[in-house]
Image 1 (cartoon, helix red, strand yellow):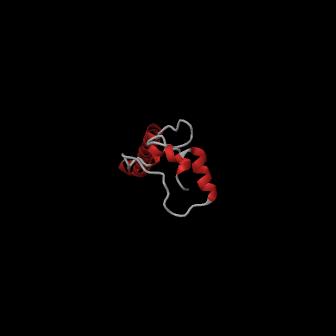
Image 2 (cartoon, rainbow, N blue to C red; image 1 turned 90 degrees about the vertical axis):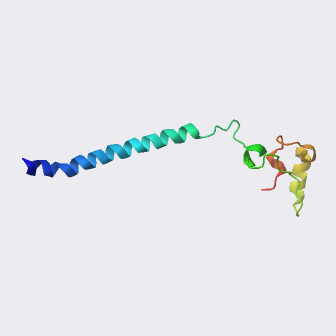
Length: 93
């Protein structure tokens, strides 16, 4: 009797491990879905991108930039933008 029971222990242990692994994977997937932030318009704001800068990030670039970038900044009125309402176009790529 014990010989027959000893043959099934690896099968029982494997099944229990598979069930435990599946439950853990399901819990992880559910947690990822719950904590994922919902993007409202598909674009991030400067406040979201620079969340570690509570006082804001100045979009003024002090290094050399292309003429097209300067044109983009002028079009977006970056010089008069106030934190946190600064378009991401104002920051270099």
